[in-house]
Length: 269
Figure 1 (cartoon, rainbow, N blue to C red):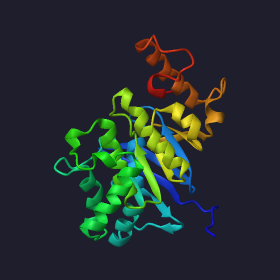
Figure 2 (cartoon, rainbow, N blue to C red):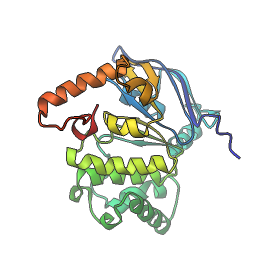
Figure 3 (cartoon, rainbow, N blue to C red):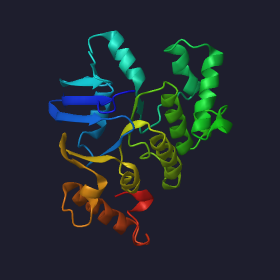
Figure 4 (cartoon, helix red, strand yellow):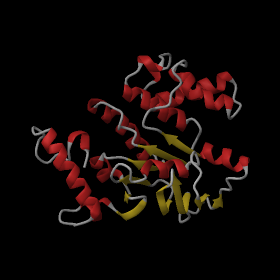
């Protein structure tokens, strides 16, 4: 049996500067199999840069990364390509190919990276679109899909590669409020199925219900981390709770009719 005490993903001392400004300052974290951890914090705090450094879309200035206890050596192209296939990335803005139908957007990496035949890749693409509730949209182009549907196609595309870890960078931030729920439902189902995920989000009602741990990030550093119960309990007095309260105050001013007891519009903190 697999050793569940060993993390699937471990990063240690990740630092990054861009344009002479330090964006990440010695960030370390671990993800075990089946965990969903949530990154929150103010804009500009380093969340997106951290996820891109973990996926090695941006190369860190310092730090080390392990996947299944094997250190990733960025200088070895084979290691890098293998790692990116096993650590999927979901972006804010979908990153779909406008000239390809939904099924082809999902299948293209299987054909180009894995070398699968068109038939094999299409069959797998259809299975993943079914998984995210979009089998009936397989022949549509991105311009014919809603924002929520586009994001579900991008999730299906990542899942088709059989990743060990999914990194999600504010996957609902570009969506209209009425479309947020359909994407969160897909993520909820993935969490229930044991997918290992690290997600940057402001959807704290979702995080309260499903996250193993909340990681509060500010100024390029992990300031606090702990369970939702610990960090968001009434009277906890944590930086995380203070941040969520500030966001709620803004939301309450902008949406005064929101029912009492909600965490905010679309479940924000």
